Amino acid sequence: MNTTEDFLPINGTDYVEFYVGNAKQAAHYYQTAFGFQPLAYAGLETGLKDRTSYVLRQDKITFVFTTALVPDSPIADHCKLHGDGVKVVALWVDDAKKSFEETTKRGAIPYLHPHEEKDETGKVVLSGIRTYGETVHIFVERKNYRGVFLPGFVKWEPHYRPSSVGLRYVDHMVGNVDWGEMNTWAQFYHDVMGFNQLISFDDSDISTEFTALMSKVMASSNLYIKFPLNEPAAGKKKSQIEEYIEFYKGGGVQHVAMATDNILDTVAALKSRGVEFLRVPDTYYDALIQRVGNIEETIEPLRELGILVDRDEDGYLLQIFTKPVEDRPTVFYEIIQRKGARSFGKGNFKALFESIEIEQGKRGTL
Image (cartoon, rainbow, N blue to C red; front, side):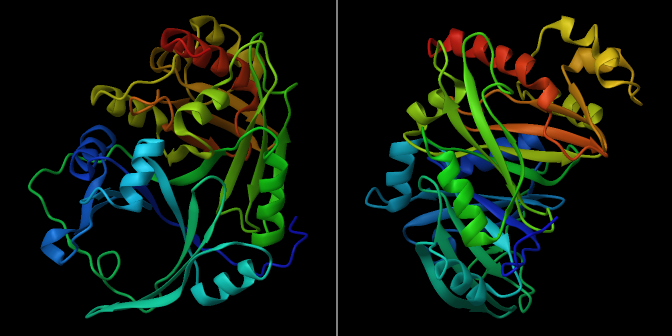
């Protein structure tokens, strides 16, 4: 139940923008491996001199990959410090100016003051605030815009167009923050953006023999936006959150969870295109039905693909996690299919994190 005035109505995730070392190659990878479709482009040919951006879309998921064209650039600085990573989590709103005013008067630090951008297809209003690490939220008001993406972008229509893999929308986005910062940022989302705490986990919920972490899930009142926030917890060895913070050099978006209506088909397609996934021990599946009850799927395809299952009071979910998609062990993806469940797979945490620890051991970072 929403206990906070909804002063910041959000219609959904507008786009996620990554600052990367080579946007052309990143765009090719996400087309080839993840089935994203080319949508829009901005760069030298459109009059930009300092950066290039490629926009990809799959159903309701829009990713933007932006790279610097000059060394003296905040984009280049971001990539030097963090490697490829998420800079912007853009939120679709009806009133970007009001969204800025409501959040900044509640304590948000401005990133982008409200302004209009126009072209022959209409206008958008953009504004933005700073959040954890160097991550920002940009509020996008596009009710008076009919263009391909944003003013300044043109249609990108290459010959190369691999098919989609059935990804539909952003289910949630997970942020990693440093020691002692989870409650601060959970309070920020509550006080500044009107989010409510959907669920929380402590180190008794999320721990193995060696590592632990804590998490709070903050969500908008309509549940269109869900942001789990992770913080390290003390353990015998270095947790995945500590590893991320060490290599990302601070807090940032750890993973984007993307929903599908058929996880078996989607994961099979992703694997055939070279996407690598974490693997839990086969023994996980021996007691699966005993743990989660009856499900529509048969066990063997789930075992073959490595898909995890968990149940809550509303139903069950199926999920799987990729390995990091770049050389720094930072950004990865979750593929999720919900069959009623509203939770995040608490029953899978131990098996999942043990598999992550195996990968950390191979990297020498555990």
